[in-house]
Length: 166
Image (cartoon, rainbow, N blue to C red; front, side, top):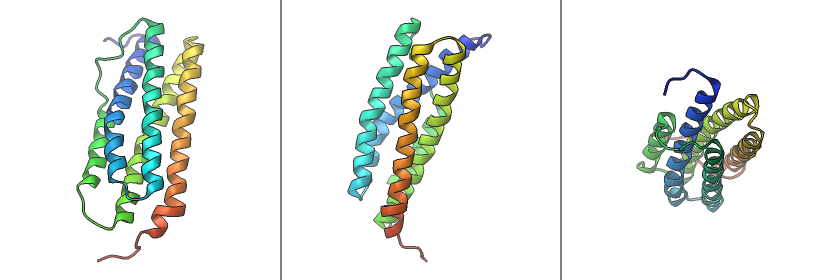
């Protein structure tokens, strides 16, 4: 697709997000399975449900645009998930591994916050007010997920992780 208008860029970015969210739908159950702290496991499971809702919102936006959501691979999310998958293969203290999972999950959240903020702005500029509201709702949820991960890190997981090693 030739990017010669903000509308085309908006659709391209929405496709990127759509693929990113679908990659997460596959990755989050693996993260939940490997989390040892119940609170972290629950956070990943809850975020999976939210991520499925994010996909539904994007589907709705594409329907309104009369566009197909597929056809783009989000390479950034693919890389973030690959990095996170490396943690799943490591041995070590469970709290330390959970801290690593939180770090990987927060990198994903920060990417999503940036991406949703961008497409929300495009939607506003293009007069796509209903889409902008849906995108803002998702952006808010991504921010809350990031805050929850920070809280879990600071009050549970990182507190239990050994601070010295060999």
